[in-house]
Length: 163
Image (cartoon, rainbow, N blue to C red):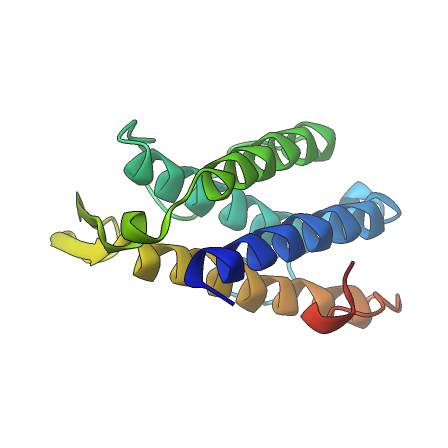
């Protein structure tokens, strides 16, 4: 498997898991989704929002169309349906980006100003994409735990079993 094929696989998994997670979260009440459960981004909604926000920031850097935010905790959408619709659009952007990738593209260096460290940073596109997909997996794991704490069984999340 080439690096590009691996990223295509991860992008497919990422989109499928986001669809599955949002479908599960749609069965929760707004109060349950927004309940402060002492997670890093407080709630299920806050965590899903953070994932969308950071993906939009990274896509802006990759596509040289900056997406400015004041904080990584900034809430883009209070309304779950709007958040879900933008997640779907953003996942399509990711799929399109990954679909156009060639192996040499992965060595392109992205230079940007970090929101977290307030400093200049530079990483290859391959490193950035690896981070983007691992970041999604990390926080979806948190959401899966939060859903479980509410008494719901999310189901299978392993990449090997997603078609």
